[in-house]
Image 1: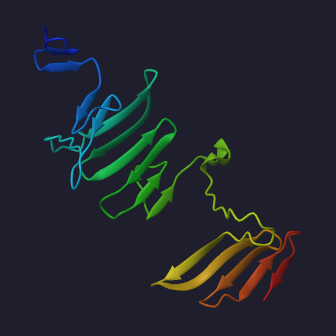
Image 2 (image 1 turned 30 degrees about the horizontal axis):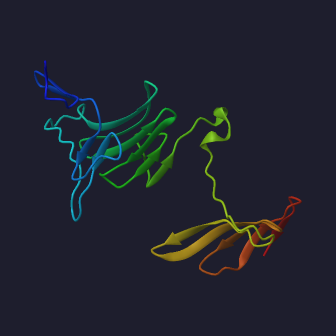
Image 3 (image 1 turned 90 degrees about the horizontal axis):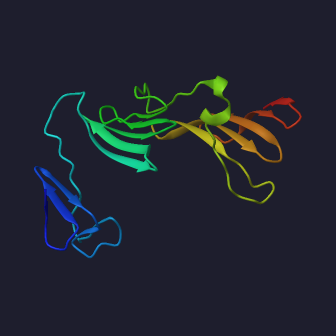
Length: 178
């Protein structure tokens, strides 16, 4: 083990320990500060090419792992203690709660666990009568249907490229057709 001058740097074999902050390209403003301009980045290079090997950034607080950003082969994973989000390179699928997404967006959750796995679409407009969150269905870039919920009149369903309402379920659970 060797300490370099008055600096809090210790070298022991292949390991180097920095006791203070490190700045690359500038004075450090945190434990590690990397600054530059133009095209630059931080590279984590794992030369192994097996599916069980990965490169990762681990986020730890109070000795507990709180999150991991990692990749194995081609996929990028964001892991938290409550589950995974997968950004899949092959096919471009995104998985939330699953590492094997079957579709472009695949959300997996045990419904017995409560509302934690629900999909929420929120309209943040605070004006009564103006809240209209909706789902639009498209075929080859053309709208072919929609489901819309209005804060004052209930749920509406439309089909085709027209916005004409095909069915409404009002706030009293009554169904109107046409």
